[in-house]
Amino acid sequence: MIAEKIRQMKPSATLEINKKAKEMKAKGIDVVNLSVGEPDFDTPDPIKEFAIKAIHDGFTKYTEASGILELRRAICEKLERENGLSYAPEQIVVSNGAKHSIYNLLLAVIEPGDEVIIPAPYWVSFPEMVRIAGGVPVFCRWNERFKIDMEHLRSLITRRTKALILNSPSNPTGVVYDKEEIDAVAEILLKNNILCISDEVYEKIIYEGRQHISIASHSPEMKKMTVVVNAASKTFSMTGWRIGYIAAEKEIAKAVGKVQGQTTSAPCSISQKAAYFAIKEGEKLYSGMIKEFYNRRNFLIKNLPSDFVYPVPMGAFYLFVNYKDMDSVVLGKRLLEEKFLATVPGADFGADRFIRISYATSMDNLEKTVARLKEFVEENR
Image (cartoon, rainbow, N blue to C red):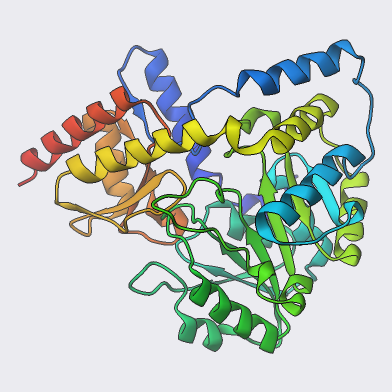
C-alpha cells in the first residue's frame, strides 16, 4: 500500500539520532545530545508576550494562505534593510518552517526528471525533498575549503538542470561564501539559466566580522533567478513555532502559494504574529545568542583533541569533523555506545568520513563532550 517513492525515502538521520538520544536519556543514561540543529535558548520573552497578546486579542482564525500581510511587509522591510533586496508582499510566501518552504517550492517548479544540483556536504533533507518532487538530485563535490568545486559544477550542467541549492552559512560545515565565491556561482547559473534556491536560515549566526551575502544581491538578473529561503527558527530560537518564508519573482511566489493553499494552507496565526514581532525588533533579540554560540565554538576549537580535523566554522553552530578517516556510521555508533555522545554521521550529508557535532547546547555539555572525546582518543591510540 505504500508508494515506492516513500519506501525508498531515507528517514531524517538527525531526527532518528535525536530520538534515540532522548530514549537513552529517559533510561537514565547521561547522553550528551550533539545531534539536533536547534538553539538551546528559550524563545525571547518579548516574542512570547507578543504571541500571548495575540491569543488574548482573539487572533486565532485562518489567515491568508501565503501569510498575513503585516508579516509579509515586515519580511520585505527586513530584506531591503539587511540584504539590499527589494520585494513586494505578493512576492513573499510564509510557510511552516524553511523545510516546508523549500518543499513547496520544489513541488511548484520541478518537472519529473528535472535535475537539481546539490553541493556536498549538504543538509540531509535536500536530496529526499528533490526526489519526492519528482526531480533528480545531482551532487557537486567540494573543494579544499569545503565549498563548491566550480569546475565540477560546470561539468554537471545538462539540458535537464533546473536548479541549484546554495546554503550559506552551511549546515553541516559552517562555511560562509564570500563575495567572490558568490559572484562565481552566480555567473555560472546566469550563463545556463539555472534557478538558485538560496537557503539563508543561518545568515545571522556568523562570526569574526564575516558578512552574509545573498546571491540574489549579485545583480538584478540573478535576483530574478533566485528564491531566497529564510526562517525565524535559528535566528530567534523559534524552531517550534514553525515559520519560514520565501522571497521570489511573482510567478514563482504565486505558484508556491497555490501549492500551499491546496495542502496545509497558512501557518499558525499566533506563530505568524510572533514572527512579525521578532523580525521587526531584530538584532536586540538575538545578539546575545550569537555571542554565546561564538564562545562555544571557540571552546571546542581550543580544546578538541588534534586528532579531530574540520573546517573552522564561520557561521551556523556545527563542527564537521573527521577522525582518522573512520567511517562516519561506525564512528557515530561507537561514540554513542561507548561515550554516550550523540552525533550525526556525515554519510547522510554526502561526506562519509565526517560526523556533525552541534554546539547549540550548554557549555556544561560541551565540557563533557571534550572530556569524553579525549578519553576516546586515548583509548584508540
